[in-house]
Image (cartoon, rainbow, N blue to C red; front, top):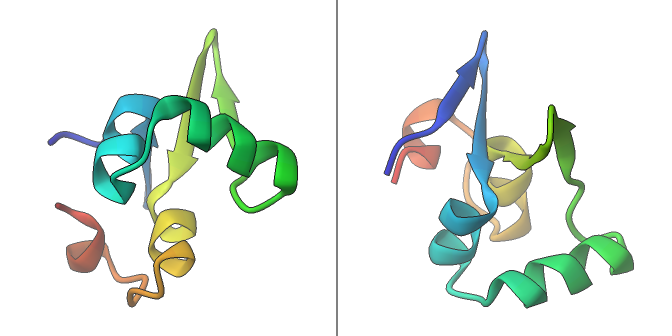
Length: 68
């Protein structure tokens, strides 16, 4: 799985995030509406910060822990 490296912040797309969390993309959209997950819009695509995903699942938000 690749990540988009924006300086120090790693971003994952919807497909990568849904795979990592083991949920459907529609579930990600519901999580966004409930405020559980904050999407970042880059151009026409949606990305999520790896640190946000890590804290959502209770992982340590260090670079190595986010590279799955």
